Image (cartoon, rainbow, N blue to C red):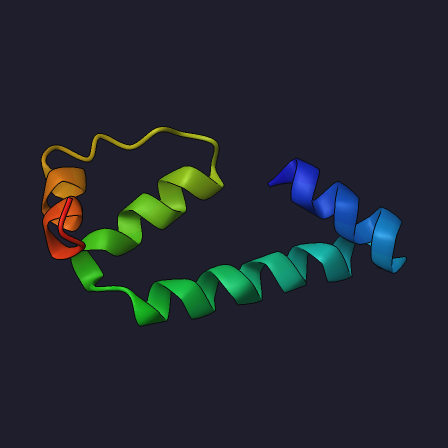
Amino acid sequence: MEELKKQLMEKLGLDEGVSQQAIDMVLGFVKDKLPENVQGFVDAAANGEMPDSGDLLDKAKGLFGG
């Protein structure tokens, strides 16, 4: 998220606080649109972690014919 914050600051001229608020708002919006059992993955990814998805990816592939 630091890279995204940096780009918001450089490309849009936002200060650090406003950049962080924008990121938090977008993450909140995305999480609200996802099922509750997937929201933790967004939090983990936002913190730079690679969450253990178990068979979640395989299930998602099935939804799209993969």
